[in-house]
Image 1 (tube, one colour):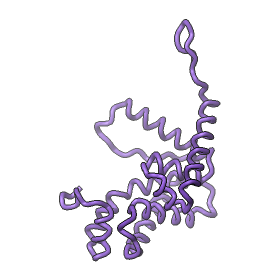
Image 2: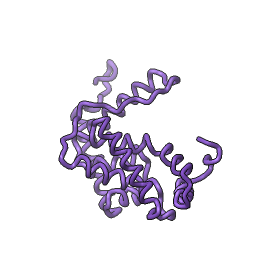
Image 3: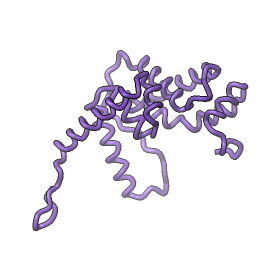
Image 4: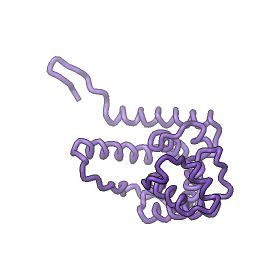
Length: 194
């Protein structure tokens, strides 16, 4: 991250963009490009489409930056654009569940972290396959993007209560499915029985 932007919030960078600072917008793209791509990819499962929607999201954000209200969280505004662009692009398409999220290059990544990443990707694939879009998106925004309930409600165009219900149902459905697939292990005199 360039030192000049290190301590500047996303909302302040957006204000600078509104004043015509292209470098501030480039910094926002740098901060959010991978996150938006991952969010979109989870919905479509196709690399080329996810890249296209990610690019369209940033083009639309640049075109609409004057309408952004800096008193609101920039992340929620940007993810709302990404969600809408994704809906536009994928409305008539059937997602291809066969692809996985490309792994980011990390030379210091030990084998245990790779195994955890694989487990997390498998969990997200299972969630994508078993949950309705609104429940999946609410889970993704809450746990992958660490958004609060109010921001998720803005992104999804729902009330905060509705988002809480979506999260509850998604966790319950996914938890039940995981229990069925992997029943809890029972300790016996000989050790753990899987």
